[in-house]
Image (cartoon, helix red, strand yellow):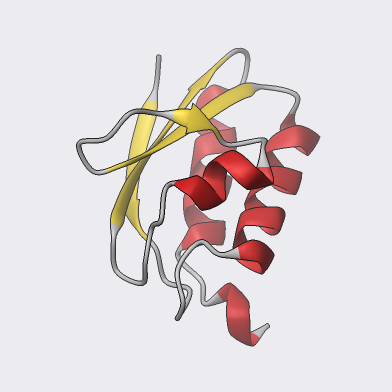
Amino acid sequence: MPSRTVAVASSVGLHARPAALLASAVNDSGLDVTVALDGGEPVDAGSILEVMTLGAGHGDVVTLTADGPDADAVLDSLVALLSRDLDNE
């Protein structure tokens, strides 16, 4: 399965708004995507609550993994999303 790592750019990490935007993008993709805090257990990236339980803060590195057709393209778009400060958009 393809995976990507990215540092969380949102100024307060993956709290409610950024977690909701990530989960929405994942659900729109139609793929199974997981996200894990560096060295931690992966959670369903399509679930706002599970993403928030990671406790990922600004600058923390997370790993996204996807399974399915176009997984590389989906992961690239999710990396681009998390690379922005979603709190200031």
